[in-house]
Length: 452
Image (tube, rainbow, N blue to C red):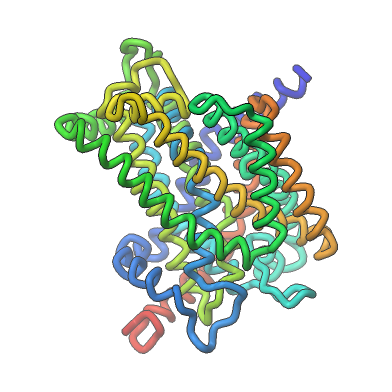
């Protein structure tokens, strides 16, 4: 076991090294430039389209509304990464890691947009009459048969990664947080979580979408209210926190208190890695959800999809990071969810940790639901629709084991598989970029759907 652990440690260091950082940021920047920074220029338009997408057009095809598809994608991205992931990035990489999370998000908006555009353009209808898409179909139908191995690689890595990042890691986070805050045994939480997950997941994308579009807005508002309260209490520290974040992004952080100190490279590496873990820009997963959404144009879906990165990282992750910074707990030596909990306790003594635990539980639970659909479609691509029911049952059972077992190794494997998923997806986006640009220009041209 130690040999396997050492292997994944070695592999993780490679796949999250400088080449991967350059590939992720470079692809996002390349797409932003090719698109004329459209994802940034069209932010207001994107928010308007989110509201509009609650009711699909008469000529749209898909199983759920684009709004429900966005909520499904957000349900998968707004998870432990927004609370524990941000805290870990700051604890290990220093405050500057948050700056590099912003950079990852701003270039990642173009990546996320492109992922969704090609996912919808090249989606198919399976033998059950449902629309399916994602990087595997974009590679298969956009790049041709010679690239089939790349599509298979993505589906294989995604199908495995789901059980780590999207299932067991999330269940473990919920069970651990509830045990620490309320003293409830992990097996009890695991049993309840397994039953609730099964009730939703066994109903497929329509039930997942219906649950997501109700829970995600609610949990986001609850968390935003709670973290805003923390920032109001420590409002005088906000300017200094922003200054520290920006300064440390380019200078590194000297050791202070319980904090070990971080180099610039560590800040970039942790910021990019945690940013991708949180918003999943570059993984291609959002395209799998949006491919099931009712739409008549892939660019419309792409605009909706890219807003998920902005909401997830620029809004929610930033607020989490600021709360950790303004309360001063980032030098305490703690990491993960405990660090975020300390920030909430500093503003709300005696009950802050309970508020954070409830938010973390909701965030992580919805991630389990969103990733259930992602992983299911990966295995369906590999094995056919016959794998649907067995997968859903296995996914539900895995939740219980995730809640009750020690998962330090699972975190490592999940982080590694994240990077391995990104590689096939990013390669396909670079190769399909001319088509993405053409579709975008046509859509926003005078007389086009988005040009009015």
